[in-house]
Picture 1 (cartoon, rainbow, N blue to C red):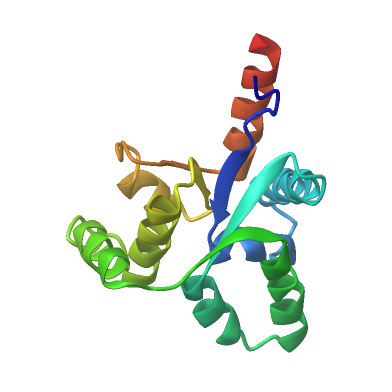
Picture 2: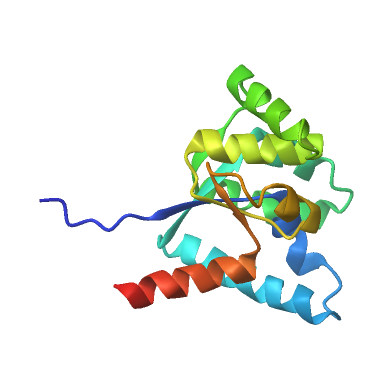
Length: 156
């Protein structure tokens, strides 16, 4: 009998990775930052598994703030899966773009789904609204993700 516990596989989009660098004067931004930092600690501890993608590489490389880009890129080696953009991902992304997702957001969602992630974490309100009914993945804010993890741990 395998006694290993299943580890949740998550994907953070670039908005989520950038949240700690945003203006922290708004309460929601601070809460999302704290949640994101807590999630990253869980990744470091192996409690949560991280997915990375070529889409994250592309967006992060375009970041004008070199130090910020380096910090974000430091998470790549901790990822258990690193997705390249394949024709399958491009086709799936077109599906999401057709319902109004921005092209890069659509590629993030498609990469996360193809990797088998259960959750895609984002702070992008538009993406959260567009993907609210997507059955293949739960697109969620980092604060709400923490709540789901706490709810799950209380059930066990």
